[in-house]
Length: 409
Image (cartoon, rainbow, N blue to C red):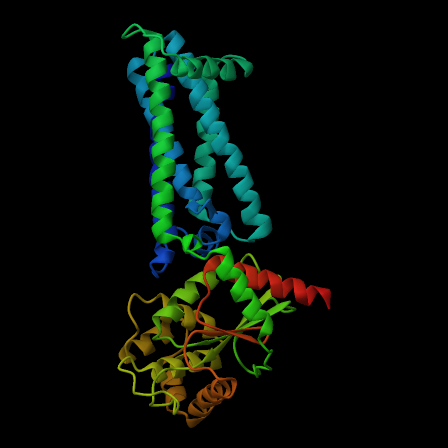
């Protein structure tokens, strides 16, 4: 295969990889904006993988690192296609080879995490793994020299970047130095822009200093543990949990919606230790005598609809639809949501009109009142109450502390 064809192949593969990485980055950041992460090519696998904490490094999505790497590969291959020469080809293919092998190694690590830690697979991520394998193979084929020559070639070019020596314009050393400077500049710009975007999107960058953390944990240690009645409530996660997290929530509550997306990304990591139990506390006087005023969003109707989905074994599917809907679901949409999860309109309507559904909802409301719940979301960590969603670093600390404490007993 000619060098020109290899360069063209690298350009096409890196362009596809760049497009996929940008899509994955968009899906990742959609979480922080409270939007659904569903994507037809991916289905549930991408959501599980692309929202776990393994999908970030220093607060930046792994997909964004991939986008920078593919952009560099594209640029190097493009330069090689038009400026390639014997010595310059060796330098360019050395860079291409090092970069593509790094991507391939990252793919192996991420695939291992996906299969053995998250027990899920992202189709789009899988495409990038295949692209990385082909990129590494093509760049190696174009190199055609012993492996040690790769490092030596790149080291020599990097040394020239640091030299203040004037280079003859249009010489191969000149092009190598310019290319090396451009690569370093793009890496620096990618790193700083990634950190900047993450600062505004990632909950991990919320200001929560050590003093506040210490005071919060001291306060948390003084909290008593309540016995929360959870019989018959829907649950997911571990069947033998070290941490039971009871979530009093409302489908019309924007903070509950954010909490939904946060726990969606946490559950795969803690799936062997954590069990989440859902309890209803709608802020709507129609069914909640402790709510100050009626809700325009009809929170009671949404809660009853979810209870009907639970009756037919579809609670979590319906729960996810309600929270992932771009806007709070309207009463007329509830039946169509039921059909989406496999409940007939007649069964769903009968359940909504059944007085037993109202009684079950009132039991959750009375339980919340007994425990002193006044706002949503309110969580009980093995019986300890926390009002509102803690910042992500603190949330991890609380989860790990409760798991360690339960492990000692």
